[in-house]
Amino acid sequence: MVTNDDVRRWVTEQLYWDPKFDSTAIAVSAEDGAITLRGTVGSLREKREAQKSAERVYGVKSVKNDLSVRIVGSHGRDDAELRGDVLQALMLDGVVPSSIDARVEAGWVTLTGTADWQFERDEAELVAGNVTGVVAVDDEVELTAPSPAAGDVKKSIKKAFKRNAKLDADLLSVDTLDGTVTVTGTVGSWAEHDAAIAAAWAAPGVKKVEDHVLVGF
Image: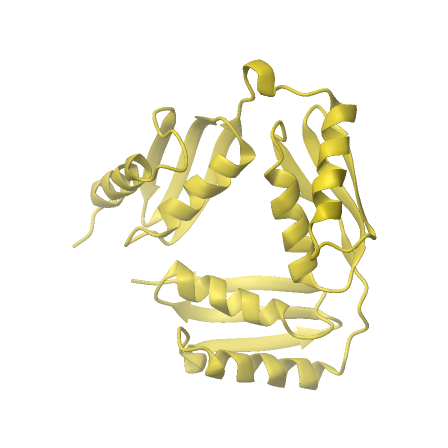
């Protein structure tokens, strides 16, 4: 039987093992497979990587990321300068549409504007978060692609589940309403969870995905 102490210890060991961030200031707690990360890291990217690392551990059903980003020394940036670097990074990425803008306050980036696809929003958020000095990113980009018939969306997502070798489509259900897709069911890992949600977002016209997929062990 896997205990809370087991999962907490495994996550702590995994964080220490991962070279993408410094885990010395990260504290881990576990309760019935729900992990909470607390402490500080040096960048937003490190905060994201720490969560991904924790999600790879057996027995982890969810991760609450309460890590704070603390910018120290020369990495602290003036907001105007930081906004310029964020906009430059967005412009240089061929996936991010030119309709996406950004504003910055105290190192906190808010993305605004419009996009046709969720993957464009995701790319903009990833790119902005990788700029040195950014402490957090809020994504307020609106999806503007027209919504096809709800039945077509549901059918296309179910087909995508069946095509994906990582997923057992019979364990997942899909409901659609006015561009919002709700995915429910149980999967065996976070990789399967992410594959299911990505498939839902990939359907034409989807503006929001309600994630009710549970990771079970």
